[in-house]
Image (cartoon, rainbow, N blue to C red; front, side, top):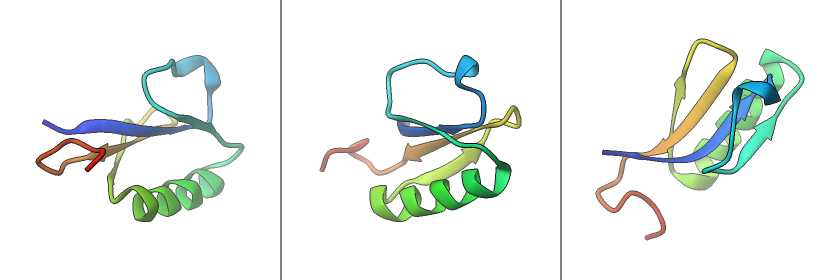
Length: 65
């Protein structure tokens, strides 16, 4: 099972804690931020189709090493 390591959303009302949350203004900005975070966190982006993207670490350790 993967671990959610970040959330990128256009609607702050749809997200809550548990992972770092990045609020963006547009779909273009959302894609740019998610792409950068994918590279930085070595994670995969998954679209929840509600204006929110989650970045998930699918490595065997689930993050932090």
